Amino acid sequence: MKFKEQLLQGTLIKRYKRFFADIKYKNNTITAHCPNTGSMHGLLTEGNKVFFSRSDNPKRKIKYTLEIIKEVNRHKGINKLISNKIVVEALEKK
Image 1: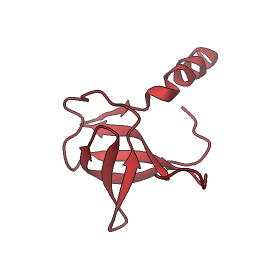
Image 2: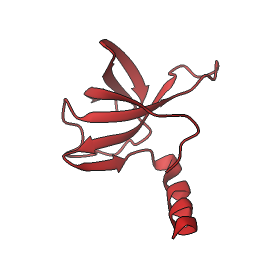
Image 3: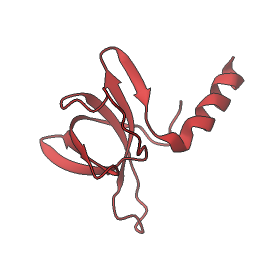
Image 4: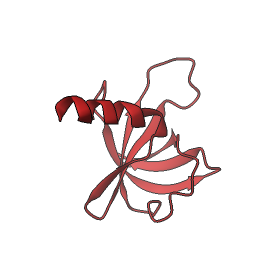
């Protein structure tokens, strides 16, 4: 999947209230929006590598969005809002 901007990489600290995830990024803790409200059992282990995007939209309260969680040797897309885009891109590239 090609994102509009390069994804940033950090380390998961925790997810809470279903919509928020704290991420360690460059020795800072940032809060990202978590667009997947499901349980995501097994993915939310503290220390997992995560990839997230940044929005410059001044109307957004939280400027980061959690996109991918790396579990063992697999990258799992957790942003349900882009699932169809991923399938379309895969079909176009066969």
